[in-house]
Image (cartoon, rainbow, N blue to C red):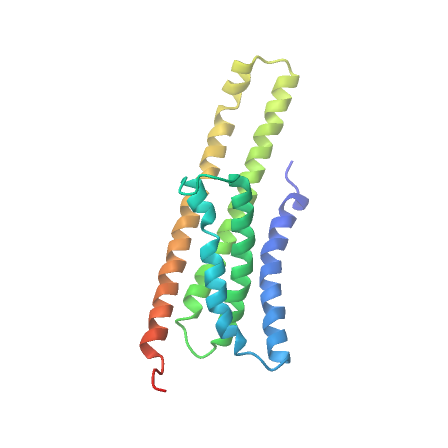
Length: 190
């Protein structure tokens, strides 16, 4: 059955991202360089943009490479970029607009980590039930028949990506507005 130990690694990942951002932001303040956080927004955005290589591979725009390796790359780059953007967001305490994409980013992170956990868990449950049914001596057809609803649930769990995409598009939209406002209100005079 499901235990806290099953959930803990994914919860720790999410919390570590937040803690790393707090530590990095604190370190920048400690060394007297909090303005570096502004540039981390650009670097973090570029890192997150490069994490979309996974989507390109999945849709076969990139024909080579193992999709699982691209997924791991996507996760790692998204986590690293998120830390940098969270540090960047910590710099802007005087305005709401930068906080909107940051809040959306936190939702995207949470949906990604949650979806990763739920899919992993549902696949493990189906695998375990399949092994039990095979050990009971059921025919492959009977096993598949009994696992129909479980397999359907796994398929539903795979659809969490739809909500993850929606949150990602909201994040991208709010980030675009944030970037546009920077260019509009930037002091362009030399």
